[in-house]
Image 1 (cartoon, rainbow, N blue to C red):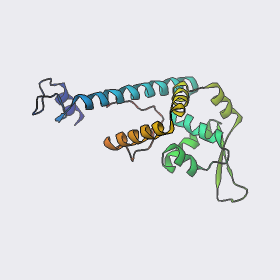
Image 2 (image 1 turned 120 degrees about the vertical axis):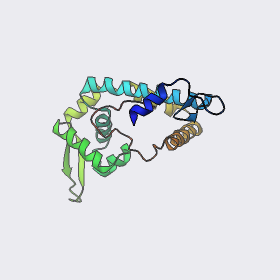
Image 3 (image 1 turned 90 degrees about the vertical axis):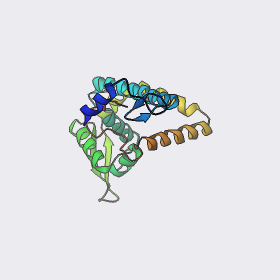
Image 4 (image 1 turned 30 degrees about the horizontal axis):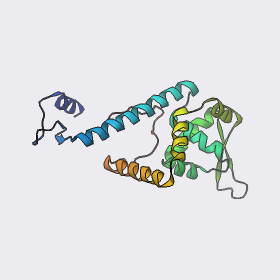
Amino acid sequence: MLRQSNEYLARSDRLSQNGAPSTWGISMTSRSESALVTLRRIMHVTDTNARALARRTGLTLAQMIVLEIVAGDDRATPKEIARRSGVSQATITSLIDKLEARGFVTRRRSEQDRRLIRVTATEAGRTLLANAPNPLYAAFSERFEALPEWEQLMLLAALERVAGLMNADQVEALPPTDEPRLSAI
């Protein structure tokens, strides 16, 4: 199936009924092409950043995000971590297992409610975070927070709309595997 799609795309004589270039039989207007190019650029930057982060820390971007959440809130439960990171509890369990095996987090039962499990960053986890800055996300957060509230809300709404247009609004926010995702829009 993928091979057929690639062969179809390789043919340069594909045009839509109105004469515009066509991909997978869909007419590509200049605005939609620009939007897709912009999305590819964003994905390229985030993928490149994730790979560099993995080389520096030995952790995936997903693991680093979980570690940051845990380090910022020692009372976090796996359910809360899953909610804040935008993934399922099954995915969070796997990520926490990997972080715990490497000595970056620990699990402990709540003293008030023994049914609750709290995840805590270890000293090694905090040291790793302190020594592994994520400049892309830090710069984005700083710039985004400096925007007026109306613009933040507008951008968030636009990004959520784009996610919906790409059928990504119900997809987990972090890659489910240990490998940084490879972009292919």
